[in-house]
Image (cartoon, rainbow, N blue to C red; front, top):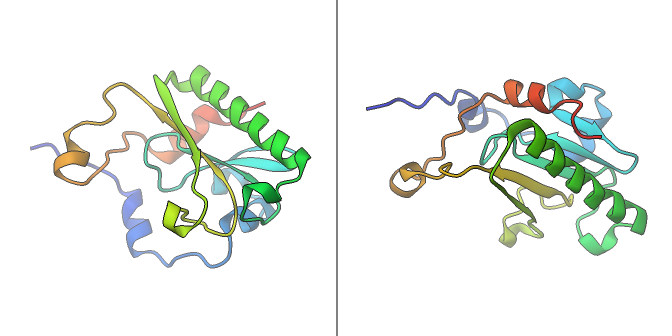
Length: 158
């Protein structure tokens, strides 16, 4: 039997849950590498998901704390989706995925983990990245450490 090594999950399982809003707090800390912030636009930024569904799971969020898509100003909305497109391009060039899941979870019942701050998920997918583990063990294997993924993507979104 093979063993799965995913040490970062235990930090999430046992760790104290952060208070506040990660999409508001992390950009203010001026610690982009520690906080996995890959890109800063004028109105939106890109952050690597600390507890990803797949390697290089990115999130694009506005700096402004808003919950609904229709609350974005025209400038925020345009830049938001321009940054999503730039992120997809960077992921294609750096990691060569076979496809993407891109979406927003609006509201807790829709799966929003951070309910009060809108953000778009960009999840690269590779042929064969889903195997027997999710089906029989309710487990997803993320085969790369976050620091390695961050290093591959830092500076690529422009």
